[in-house]
Image 1 (cartoon, rainbow, N blue to C red):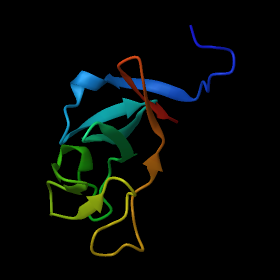
Image 2: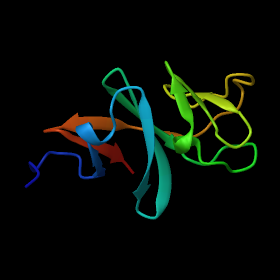
Image 3: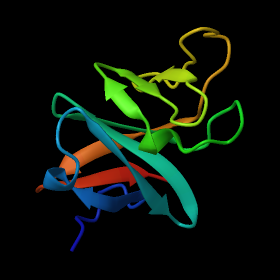
Length: 107
């Protein structure tokens, strides 16, 4: 049961063990697909839809903090959501926290 002062806008999306360091996955939060990444034990969440042609960013390869969209190679920094080659554009990011082995995203 959440504490009365706990922020109820965070939703459990995975267990920490479900997303090993150096990997990402796609999670469904209230009908919206988000990309969730584990960079050395720190989790980041961003919109799963690539700005180029709508590819699934969460299915891309993660190298350090950069994910490469599997469809056409667009790259994003998962810590900021910014496109690597054009930092003026980027994907929406979401607050993530870990609690008791669960990964939670603020919606």
